[in-house]
Length: 481
Image (cartoon, rainbow, N blue to C red; front, side, top):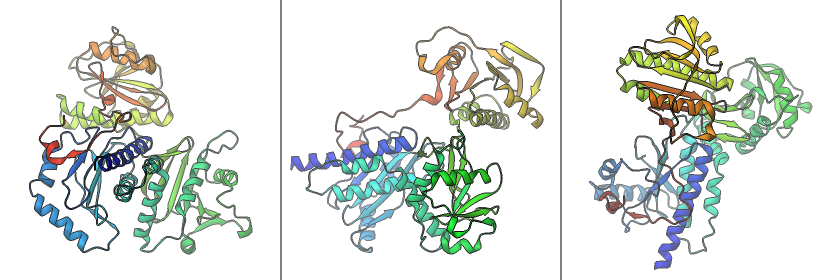
């Protein structure tokens, strides 16, 4: 009996490890937990080695324990009324900051998988598909007597392309009210191949959308390529050259999933899969719905625009009025996104003091009013200049190319360079100051009182040991800290 429990715990640990690693590559570092009940006779258990559910205990208790007989009977009823051998989706466990996916079935009574909901995610649906696949793998492996070889863990580590494909297929079927005939995984591989292919040293720019062959007749073409000359999707170099014809325009290449058939300037149909190539990165969409981004030959969940939740919270907690804090956040966001898009580093000092600090640098006379839309473009240009841009609480730029100094701190990060560490030192010595640092390679740091607020993470690796699931009642009673 002990060996059987050890084998099942190992199976669960392998799947959770693979899921966490795969999601961490697709998004930012991601934690994973599962609440499960293998059979109707087993107790509810929880497997949360990274404490992702910390702070949600009251909601979990409300859902699972306060009306346990009723909850259990509702699951039994759902299983009895469904086709045997399938996993049935159940209502999500709605917890703030988490994405969840739950199933029940004859082969595995109940599972609820949860992972971090990152603020800059394009769409939660590929992640949900990932959680769904983990549920299927656990139901297939948990009661198996075969030797554990961790194949399910390896599958989940590398599931990003298939998770995106599963979502795209389901969404297309919903929009078209019929089954799509296009093979999505080869299309996704082609998009990645094109994104890495240079033409005269330049990465691709322009739009390409894929439409089912039976709907091509509804497309308004500017021109079509003769059938015998239409390049197939495997001709990546040829397609890369054709993208030059639609670069920096509202024109798009059109494909039926097999070949490039022409050029159109019409809006992308809602059921079409489109790839927007933007040089060193791009975005995948279904119609107007953003699915994910891609860069460096891989798909990612990120919108590639910093959400800066920590900055928004700091401004709302300040003594600024809600209206002023909202406007200030919007202006800072625009400046940061401009720096991100143009891939240059910058530093913004947000001075919330009634009497602004005096910084060494170019002082503006008069200060630049950021409420004037005509000044935003100039402000964006000022962020390119070495040194910090000094922004006051009344929405003015007091100066630019400002030098930030301060005493050495014990928590400096030498890997981050002078801009970042100067901001740490400066904010450590000045009250009511928030420093936003944008690195040329896109990370955005929110620094307050000498601490990088955006760096806090409770994620920790779970390799090197095998955590053990615990009964849900034990977890909620606080035995597990």
